[in-house]
Length: 257
Image 1 (tube, one colour):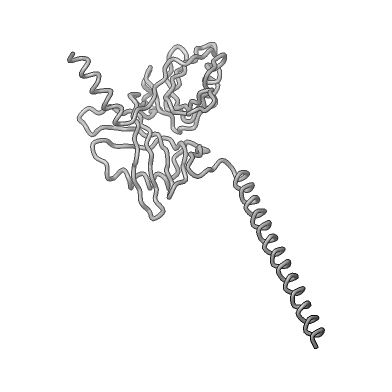
Image 2 (tube, rainbow, N blue to C red; image 1 turned 45 degrees about the vertical axis):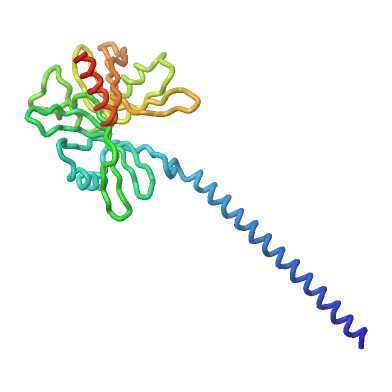
């Protein structure tokens, strides 16, 4: 009887160890499967394009999409003192919602307004919220829309579309020959001016050639002469509203001093 009990007990112990081994194997298999799935997800994300949460993705076209324009109009309706008109779409940023970066014409509501350019950040919330969260101004005067019937000789004319024309891109490429230190990407054509040759007014994304480059936007003037030789004749950066106000105050103090 004791021998029979010992045999039964031994059998139970063996089965118990076998079950534990099977559970450990299953747990390891589940862990390995989870790791494989995570690795595959990471690979898919890295191969999925340039969209990275927290970073801006450049727009494929500077033409402002209708849905973005509708959100912008909703947000701009709350602003006073300056009217903003989107002229070029630059990119989007995935947050808890979406940030949209646009180049706008900024026109003060004054008797003799001067229309200039501004970089505007538009936030679109997940629940339909719309808010302009940042504005960086420039002192570059925006050209008037081109009038085919009454062209203004010697004045800048705004193109019908912000798409960079082949002629403007060719002029910029020629102007950059031999220049080092930064790369220039033409993002929008803002105006052309026929002189003894042609001036092109463009919004460019400029990236310094450094170890940790910080790209920024500038409005660049490129002059191309009648022989096709080109050069960059002017560059204007943007300043946040607070920075611009501080600069004006400093200039005023200097003048008064």
